[in-house]
Length: 357
Length: 277
Image 1 (cartoon, rainbow over the protein chains, first blue to last red):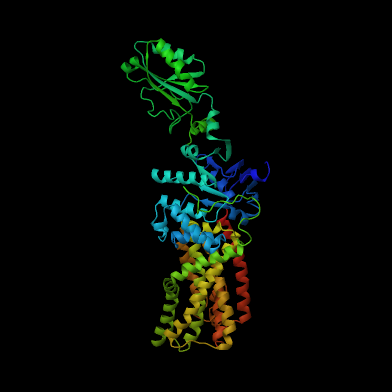
Image 2: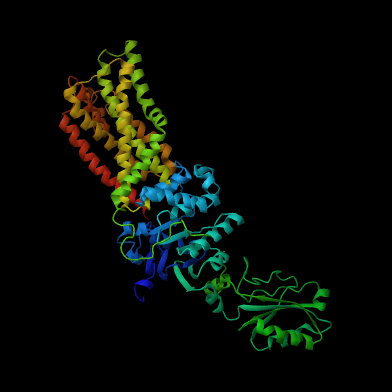
């Protein structure tokens, strides 16, 4: 900590939570700090301890051990003060069904002691900004999941919290609503709001978070920027090439590609590889890179065409030219090159040996 | 996205930027105001909901049976104070029990208030205060209802202080017990709860008969003595119809105060267990 200006907004140290009837720790010695203005993601499968960690920070769960602070306030020691500093957007709709949308916002601010004139001003501004102005007097039970989500984010901002906690903000939303939430998060970040979000969606973590903590079984396995996390994976950058062989024996070509400087390993893959090129591995069913080599396609095609995936130690673009040279030297024809960047999914697999979902 | 009018987070990490005004008392009043506001908007529905049952009890037992000659002429003087007690007690009980079961188990609406800057125990106290206010209103409405149905109600000005005391205690004791029910009963048992708990409470509370006259039915006298409603009913009779045999008022008041203190403490504990993991 370098002075007050750099004091982390959220500080968690050796946090432990064991629920009453459970034998294992739901959160098991987690430590991290979130800087002001940062979007911090907790990524992990269901049951990893993300929601419990957020629950402790928002005073709804009592910790078993360790410390958790928000703006320097220990949430276990002074939960009342802590509650004025945080806001939560929960996974499920908990809007007040007896009140209109606008009243939901106004009463929330009243609970937090925001003066009447100020809460009216804020409510009107937020309703406008979130595209809710026309439905301000509707009751929440008429709202879809995405709209309710929007209202809950607006409500959370009514008392100008130091940290906004978003628990699985897009789980169960349709793609359009999901993109809307993503845009909202980016706006909030631009505005300087500190955000802690939990997700089991690696795309979401990659898209939104400045830094990502990967959690599993109550432990924080890794913590860094998405780029640094994936960069730390040797052999996870891939180059996938498609070649028309023109009579060249495929094994010779594979051997020579594998011998190139910077190539750690080469494997033959099915001719119909992933179209987009990202991510070429570690999809929903993905396993570690040494997954079963895809069986060769129809024999005729196999003799004419080769698809190979090169696992690289370094940057993929630097290897495009050497690969092309090798292919050309064999009188074969390069038809497709795809660079595969490793994803957080791959990081998770590398850390736990299994897929995220 | 412009940021001109939206609230932005404060950038100081020092003292509470919202100042001392954001105190727990203020939050408590805001939470109470929310409940009063919602009830106030649905006042006719609320009154219909809570007054209908005692109204029919009064009508059938006080008016119909009396007019048909099945009850003695003085019975309405026994019944009316008991019905006021019953209304206060049951309205208080239902006003905490029902919403808490629904809030904690289904809608989770209460979460926004659990995250307000006040101790969670004070949210529980707010529920009791609010439920008691509802109960008070419902019981007071029984006075004109009684005049309307029975033609006149037993009333004496010297009994008013005791009437008010017992009425308030009756509202509180019902609300506190309702909080225990609302936080202890699992949601899938709510129907069973009302069949197994509420119905016996209604009929073992000495509302429809004076407790002292149960001499001839000693086992039932013991059972009724375990129901806090008995002490509300008996206190009401001591205030309004002292000529009817009744418990000593100080016994009623003492038992009610002790029950309120114990059940409030237990209710808050259970509430905290539901509110915080």
